[in-house]
Length: 99
Image 1 (tube, one colour):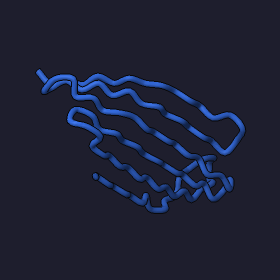
Image 2: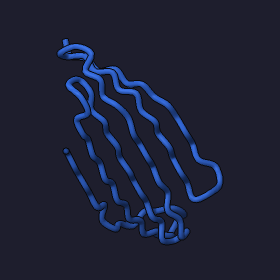
Image 3: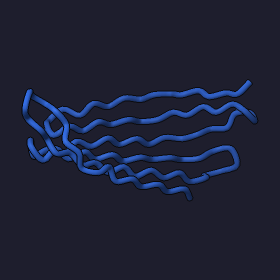
Image 4: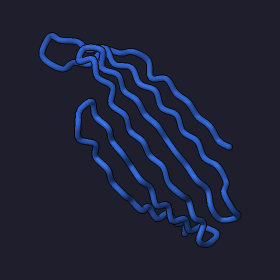
């Protein structure tokens, strides 16, 4: 099992001239072997904007299929959840190969 966590430190970001906003974020990633040529992976990102009292989430989950020694096909579901009513849902397929 692979795990990685990172805390993005608070920093000021300029939004309007002369206005600073404090933001903080958290990202957690994990991967797990499922079968000989298959892995599952997931990632969760959360960004908190103190000035606007919002938390935006990004959820990513997918599979990594090793089709050949240097060829990977990775379908994934990506869900962006802003602090509002309308999430953005995407399905992506990434192909990776070395030559």
